[in-house]
Length: 375
Image 1 (cartoon, rainbow, N blue to C red):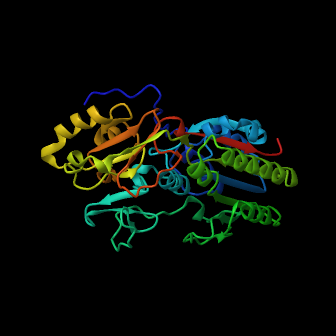
Image 2 (image 1 turned 30 degrees about the horizontal axis):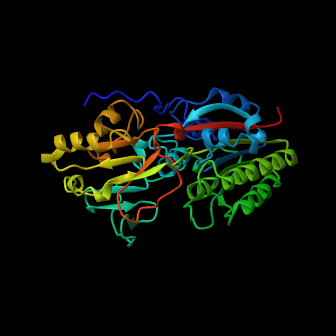
Image 3 (image 1 turned 90 degrees about the vertical axis):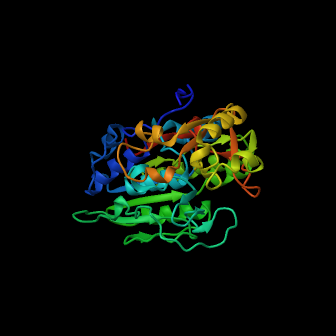
């Protein structure tokens, strides 16, 4: 296959992406790091702030900020650069790279649903459940252990905190501050900012991703959620002017225009080892060996306007998942990348039909680097 990348596709830049935020923060904490750092972030850390807070707002990419720009003047004012997410541009993959300072090809947490040859089924890896039925699955995961960069506290004079949703239980030797909703998220942040001594905080917020999935990126609900985040960040920064805040996102989102109900295509489904997996705008396919050529031809005939099908090995060789790692075998034979027609591919009848979504290489891969400090 000799297809060229679409001109609106953006390849992850592993010298200027979310992983490089983590690499820069890792060096700040004295943690091991072998990845490039971001100079535009490092310049804000050279004075060794007493308190450093890194916040990842799920889904708050450059595109949602730009179309809701009247809702976020404070964040826009402090945006220092545009960086890329990982590919797929999705929470599972990007937050793992952010937290662990490792490439997708190293950690293997590529998407929400993954096929594991030993288990012979698609599994939602955050939940440990069958992707179609939702039943709990006992399996031995081949994914890399998620050792987060901020766990390394040797020779670090900073007390390390995390802020995660209360429904998650991070396996962490550092102090976690669970939150219940968006308002409580900022309550937990403020409680740490008010603590004496040197503090480092790694915080993950589930918004505005949740709101945009349900209502769309250009919805009033999304604008209101982003406006709340903007106002709350401004109040927090004004109350604690000596705290340095590093704000980014795991990915952006786009409004979804329609759905490709792939599960209805019995001819192509019968050519597969398993239903499509990974993500709705970055779908992986394992094709039975005897059908690979015909699968490619018929997929392109039927869905080529909305998805570009690439051999997984080509994307691995060209560095779309990072320059090093051994988890490429999990990516199957082909990956269908969603185009700017903004459609989602549904592998099952009960697949969620989100109004806003992400995971592709279009606008959803671009995220902001925002720095708020006394300068």
